[in-house]
Image 1 (cartoon, rainbow, N blue to C red):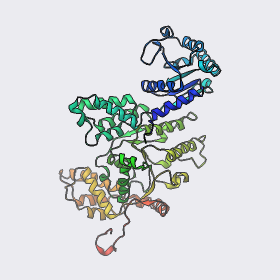
Image 2: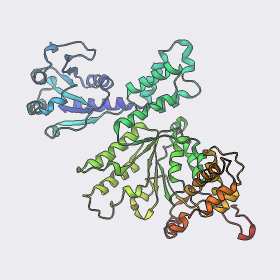
Image 3: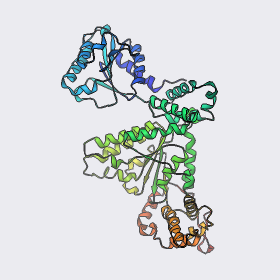
Image 4: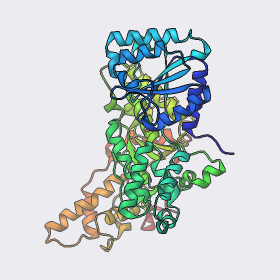
Length: 520
């Protein structure tokens, strides 16, 4: 069954609003050309004749031809008077009226006109559509204006743009331009861009590589994030999930969810994964996993810092959070990382004296986590689970809650091995098992820090290569978090029992006299 695109559904909605004799529509969009083409279809379906106006050219048809003596109607007051005096069934699309609404005279004229248009006979029905990137309707017009937030192109519309770009190529390049599955990847990479941005990305990719390169297209999304200024773009870490030592159960779960974002999963009707909440001991790989999964899945990684979005103005903090979540949906498919979410929610359930800002922020996030339907995979991390509101933990917000404990002996060895690779010492001949035994109860961050400590010592000792002894000496000089915060870690472990899924494969230890701890 062929479903309508988002743009077609929005046009059908506008057509229904016109037939319902709504006199003033406020359309929020940055895509003037694309929306105007769809508005012509909507007007025709409702039996209206479209007219377009801007302050430079006056009244025009969609093709840009001046009509009805419109060259004289460059003043907002004049075009409003022309709409008032017209006796034809018309839709007037006004492109540049918003700046003039600061003038009380223009605002009053528009408000009066909108009120009177509802009384016009059917064959003289007129409606006004304002196109603007802003959704802030002046209070004077809020009673008459119907706000329509026009959606960005969906996959079907992006696919049409891609196919059009390929059709414009010389024949010898058409077959190779999007070969080897690049077409689906290029469509996914462009979802979240405007139609013009997607076309520009495809054109740039074609002229630079003579093919459609999904990576080039995805890079454009970084500009979207920079423009909106509500999310932080995090560069991917090399190695993907291989850069994370241990946490095999969590990594296996993540790898099983990757295929759910593909075209076969969509055709099967498989819902996109919502995300995971990672709770547990600080420094044991929660944030690293968030960065690694974005690399492994070839998706942008966006960081949401709700503390940075707080404002002294009433209602602005919640508006910033909602805007950030909308931007994430725009950039989807992507990974959204909310680090230390319990700090962002502090005060939401404890009666904090912040005017209800924390509670409103919690409500906005909870609603989005529950209702989102896009391909945004949310990875939230928390160190202090006692500060998390119960609403955040219930099923439906996240697909799974994982508990991350101190690494086992096998995981400690894997973490040391990954840290050696990161520092270009994969072939250093280090006995990672001996280092893991010397670093019992170390967190992942503490284990990874042993390698640079050993490198400093080896460099000072004649710039030689590091040895197992260097790493063991560094471990002996470290006081692990498991000792300095033993009570807190025990509380985390007690909470996780029966409430969260272990991120590591369950391990049993051999007797202490066996000479080396084994995980079986």
